[in-house]
Amino acid sequence: MEKLILTAAICGAEVTKHHNPNVPYTVEEIANEAKRAYDAGASIIHLHVREDDGTPTQSYERFKACMEAIRSTCHDVIIQPSTGGAAGMTNAERLQPLKLMPEMATLDCGTLNFGGDTIFVNTENTIKEFAKQMNDNNVKPELEVFDRSMINTALYLVKKQFISAPLHFNLVMGVRGGIGGSLDEFNFLVNSLPSGSTFTGSGVGKTQFHVAAMSAITGGHIRVGFEDNIYIRPNELASSNGQLVEKAVLLATNLGRTIASPSEAREILKLKGYK
Ligand code: KMH
Ligand code: ZN
Image (tube, rainbow, N blue to C red):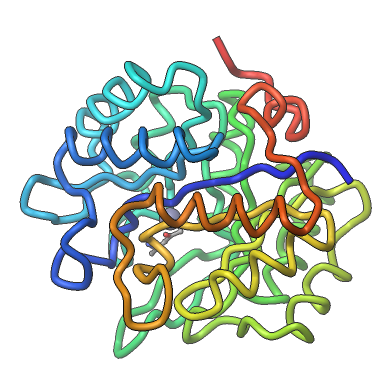
């Protein structure tokens, strides 16, 4: 099997210091959490940013400040901004980090319920618009699929030439409103991917390390981090994203995988935009 890429989703848009006081908000906190994750073995930082009070933002300036701060200590790390942002943001707001020409960014492949009355909206036209901007700027999309139907949407985008192979998917499992994190559901998603694709498994909440293990043994890659899960073990909050990455590294290496460096991750994902 090829080397395993570890992504750290260090911040997210929904989780707060109220859930875990170690969730980063400020530029300094975000940079420090990225460094802890990088030192533990993460080669990709999936990045959301916040105002100092924790409010999620997609501001160009805030992304620029956070990306520069991360880059100053994690020189070769792959920074993957979110274009999902937070539910309720406009497309124009969400697209701002693409102006920073990242190597990768997320491309959310469908709409889903996000609890209560909240809907995370990604219409077909939105997805096409985001894909086109990524394509035009040489940004590799990580295709975020929260359910099986979103793989169909990704395949439709290929057919219509909005995106092209090799595709990289993030299987986000365990979001209420999306697919669960069971072995059957994992197999269903993985067996639905087009051949030649790469994938990362992201288990939300309790499923984080179950999905990590399933990804490790099936040749996939792993995402962990506060965006998806705040516990290191049941009832014990994680002290940092680094601690979650360390646990994922131990799990993957015990299952026979070797962890990819950022440059190896660039090879595996066929990234072109690194300067
Ligand atoms: N915060 C969610 C609404 C992404 O990063 O692209 C969207 C999300 C997915 O987290
Ligand atoms: Zn995200």
